[in-house]
Image (cartoon, rainbow, N blue to C red; front, side, top):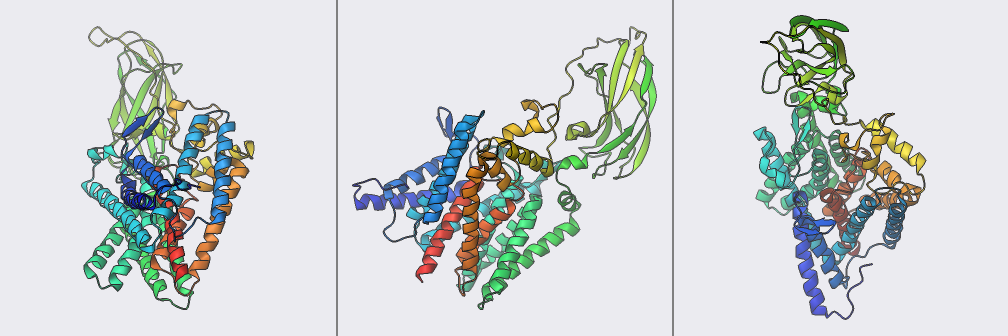
Length: 576
């Protein structure tokens, strides 16, 4: 696998290794900052800055060949990796649809596996591995600072559109995402690089480099806080559990000093979580709900039938109950309002008029109010359907978050006066994207797909193109679906994608990796950077129960680089 180019002189191989090592460092720093616009379009492929650096790293690693004395890819890893890729290719080839998408995702996964081999060739020593870990930390800290700056500013930085499509929101609240495409990606990146930051901070403290140790401690605190501000529930739980788990494992050994250091880190994380829970109602709200659709719920009681004269304004009594989790604020730049939409009786067309009425005061969750609102009838006689809805200005209609609609059948009679008459122009009804499904729904669909395609699955990355057919009895149109959604579970996604044939080598490899980590953590002594690599891998494994990251370059390449660092540090420690 990645054999060296034959007959290449040794000096040139050394030059290729040196250049590849520099490219690998640049790649490690650049992972959070992948440009949205490709730098090199190649037909159906389009290479970004990160993908170009990856191509350079893989090419130079091929030229350099394996180091004379350095870590090798374990035979078990190689065998399981080849089995896994072969299964993914077969699954893609046999996929009944979106074959090209599955093949492209498989090639991206293969690139990640090859990156492990490339890192072993280009950075075969502990010193080189430490520099890569430092580069990962540098990129992570810079991403942390950008995210915190945007959060403190309280507004989306427009110039960050160069590296992400938009900021991530939960209802009206902006989640910290920094340069990442989505806040959950930022969360796993911060979780997985924070252990390396901690290990390097400990090294600086032990070496007496106080300024670097203090800077590292501040960065640790900021990165932990940034992880919480992503409002990723899985991220919060993973960060605490990994730190506490590593501390417990190290404290069970005779030499407990590293264990106490990790226990201090776990305590710091716990204190930061507790402070956010006590001081931030939004943090509590986010951790108590899966999707923001749960925040936008109302119960509206309106007349079932109304008869109005054309152009007439008549008071209508409406009773509102806040059945969601947000207080309906009546003021500010994004107030809540009662609103309505006029449709033809069959619902096929909608009038442009959207009457809105202010609330008299804030309405807390569970509270009810009764309003008498002036309703003006259309100018043309006929039968209409009036949809009553709550509107969060600048955010969304409640209907768009799956709230049950309330409507009145309205009969309009007569003709408006000449002064009041205006042409009635009807257009298509207001269309909403489908609300984000909860994890329970996504997992149920995944299990159904696994049952339908148990052996080879439906092809890698095809879940997001398929799940909409299972959301309702009537499949939703593709234009209404968020096609970036995966099953939100690493293990279910693998089973859906590659079936039992492809998931078996993947799960066996993870079990072998976990067993290797457990064995190393039980040793009397272990290098702090290897502990950090173990913690980073465990963060992915644990967070993978609630999210999926291996098809996004920033997080996927971070995972494979961390796997390579585990082998590099393990090889070096075994020589001592």
